[in-house]
Image (cartoon, rainbow, N blue to C red; front, side):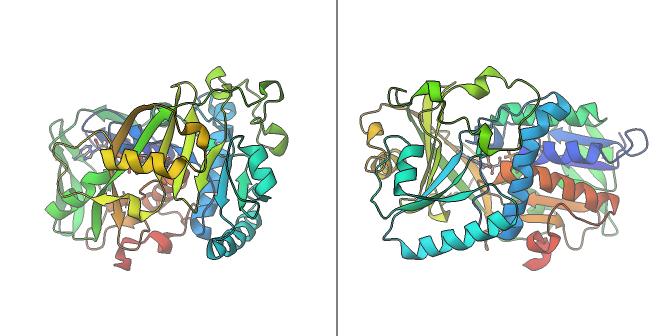
Length: 410
Ligand SMILES: Cc1cc2nc3c(=O)[nH]c(=O)nc-3n(C[C@H](O)[C@H](O)[C@H](O)COP(=O)(O)OP(=O)(O)OC[C@H]3O[C@@H](n4cnc5c(N)ncnc54)[C@H](O)[C@@H]3O)c2cc1C
């Protein structure tokens, strides 16, 4: 099979790249092909909590997250397909004693507001109103973005895949044994269990498997595979929330309303918004359709390096579950006696400078890589998809700052 580009990996990144590339390329003259060794979403994307927020300190990332939130709000009215966006709002909280983080929060807010992101500074009283049951001291502060929330990762990946195919891309599942063929420093194609794909461009959107594939080509980059974990707790009752007022319907705060009636799942009431506790270092959100609340750890200390991708443990460790309960209890006492309803663990890749690597691989013309997001994928995937498609078609890259992500910075 011949193609203009072969995308390897059907996670959030691969499907977004296919969707954006297919909308720019003629399916007859410049076919876009995506191959996946399992099913779409069978890597770590399918297991993500998929929180979408714009609470970034890097201007480059905040702008991309803003664009993703806009896309997710409009995707149904522009394509008829949903990503299961539940707009609960995202509340970031900082203790009053955490002066350094408060100063950073203020700097970040100024930058985010300058980018047109709907967010605002909130004081302790507003925090308590926004998140019923939260315990904060009177000098706590935070930020609140009404347009944030979370999406349904499986539905989002399915939607990206459907849109890619609708625009002429081919998606092939169960394709294994990838061997990229390079001739005179240029990509010629890839041998696989489904035959040879002849193409001048290969994009590796292969998540945790990327370092191994690159290693096989003699390309060494500082990539570390890490384990990311979340604990599931019972969802709190809605007693303390006045549903008649729908405190989490922030439509009045937004100009991003769609003209479609949202999916009923997207309107299920939640006991509180997504919470990013910047002092106690956890993130928390409720999934009423699954009747559970997910808690994960913020920051790189949350990510334990792993040596092998064989026999991956799909559950969080007992230590992580104990840590989550301890971190949460003083902030949200309502969860103190909630039952643990399971956990999840999967693997992502991080880089030395905690910035993703996106772009052409030095020394191999036509080989691109997209790796190292470690928890920010769904916020950034639409821009990454568009920017990679721009690189391949030779257009100026406007979807992101290529220098920020450049593989050759190492
Ligand atoms: C518990 C947890 C919670 C998370 N929460 C969030 C969150 O709230 N928000 C957020 O944005 N991100 C979150 N993430 C991170 C996010 O899920 C991942 O970092 C992201 O999904 C990676 O996307 P990807 O497309 O690059 O990789 P993946 O989803 O891992 O996709 C890579 C795909 O490539 C395929 N593949 C690999 N090698 C080959 C090959 N040789 N041939 C063919 N196919 C191949 C794999 O089968 C896989 O499907 C979370 C992750 C975890 C584990």
